[in-house]
Picture 1: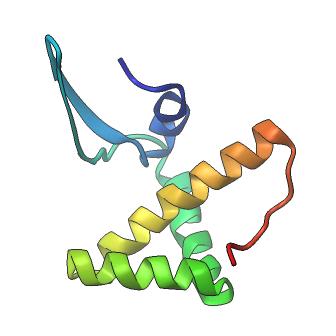
Picture 2: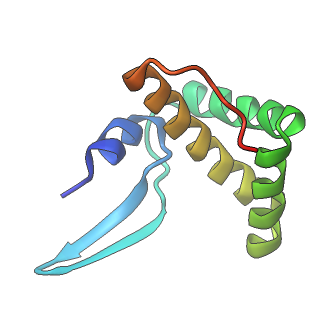
Amino acid sequence: MKSPLNQRLSPLWVAPRVSQSGQTRRDGPISRTGRGPLRALLVQAAWVWIRYDPAARGVFSRLAGNTGSAQKAIVGMARRLAVRLWRMTVTGELYRAAA
């Protein structure tokens, strides 16, 4: 069963693919379904986010080093941005850059 957050993010293409069998659950790579223009907008917003937020830039650098690809890392950042935007919408809080 998908978590409530992943259910919200699946139309955006930024939720992991889930494989379940009995008590075993495996989260796979990010699925490639959903709305293309919205995905592109999230990726572009993620590029701007890492440009202006030093904490986000640090996470991006770590992801890029681990994956060996800036393109894979920015998709991960787009997912993180979508999660942050969703949480800000639900809680009504304003954006705070990590210290």
